[in-house]
Image 1 (tube, rainbow, N blue to C red):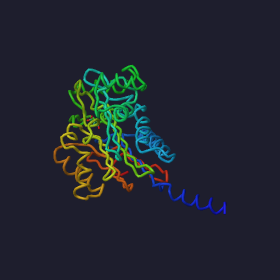
Image 2 (image 1 turned 180 degrees about the vertical axis):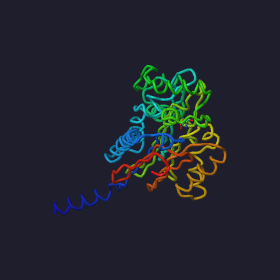
Image 3 (image 1 turned 90 degrees about the vertical axis):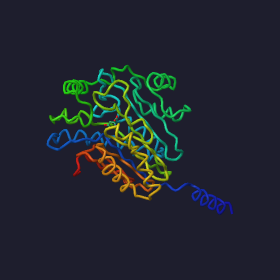
Image 4 (image 1 turned 60 degrees about the vertical axis):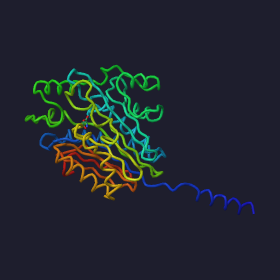
Length: 336
Ligand code: ASP
């Protein structure tokens, strides 16, 4: 009798456990007009390895029972800490030679969001964004106030010089000389350094085993930007959006266009109101609407069934995804 009761108890407990859904995670490391002839196989390899490291970090979080928010935060931190990308260390510089960083995060389950803009002393701005979402009544905090809040929350703070790299400085010097600004600067030289100086914003979207979506984006913005300029990355609905009912989106590209076209929310709205698939919705916005306005860049998006979209109207986007099988897939150019 005792044994029977135990068996019935076990059967009921197992049935009561929520079914574990397959996980998925997608990242980007910036979009732009990059081509294979300006990148050696060794350089390509360096980027692929960095993308894989980030993907596997997020995958481990998801497989060990972490939430999509945990995975997005951990993945973006890896990319922020890598000077190859335009986020955290190695970010592009303002016209005055400072790193002013923007980041945002959104929870597709609750619709809550947090963001930081124009910060120069928080080691990982994505952590700052999450703290705003979870520890304040606000969505977006900027500059000195945001830094004060991050310090109070015990986040890792750094001297602004931590973000500075020689590469970012060289890029700024070139842009100052050419009087050019970020994407679409009209520059004709396309050497390795200059061709890549304006890409590298990072983003991540994830689906956890509980069926919840999350999205996050982190950037230094645009090379040689004016002091105080804020792009789309910390703007919920423009650079980042997540809704379990539709998708999670993170954008990269010429931020002013992404803000005006409300790109991330528009993708979600096309899915919600016109029942478009995640792939069709991203194509409609990035390849038609945005491109018609002259806006260059790309997006990553993921729906609650794990369908992945990585769409860009430039010649390349650093990108990758990993699904439940744990095999990372990465790409840089259009044909891979
Ligand atoms: N969207 C970013 C911004 O405008 C830049 C980028 O994605 O490369 O700040």
